[in-house]
Image (tube, rainbow, N blue to C red; front, side, top):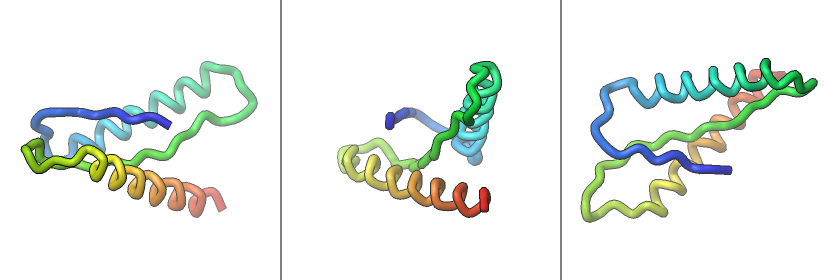
Length: 79
């Protein structure tokens, strides 16, 4: 498990595009690895304003919830 934090202004839809690029990179890495199993991951994305009220732990917890939802949805699609 790991975290990627981005700070700055993001355009509408940009997080989704970044997630798509990351997912494609995982698929490419799996194809190039020659391993007999897929390389997959669940992703949770949360955006929050950076200000004096920001609690990083709360943002990480929200991202974990989003990641779990993504994991459940991917499992439903495999059935």
